[in-house]
Image 1: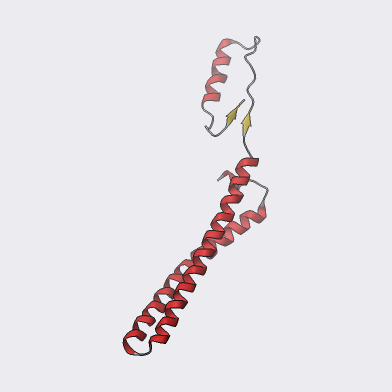
Image 2: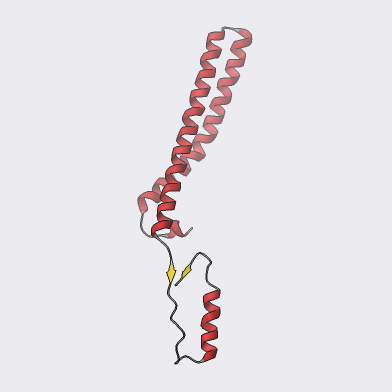
Length: 124
């Protein structure tokens, strides 16, 4: 979520949103088209020529191959962008060493606050 909130990289966010919308539209369309092609192939096998049935089966295989290829390439692209963002946008918190000027009860409060921080943060 922090990656989506990042003010930079608007192009990557638009690409992710566009790919998600395409995925939501293309998945049902590919499923229905594949089912219709296979259903037509079964009908052609029973009632008419085998050549048309083989053509419909080949069309179904091509359809699902293209769909799976697009899905894997898109997923890999967005994973690569996310991993690059994680590598370049690490959150680091610097803690001051215990100071002689700060009373001991305030040092304890500072220590408790640092323990409550997110585990993904690096304390130096």
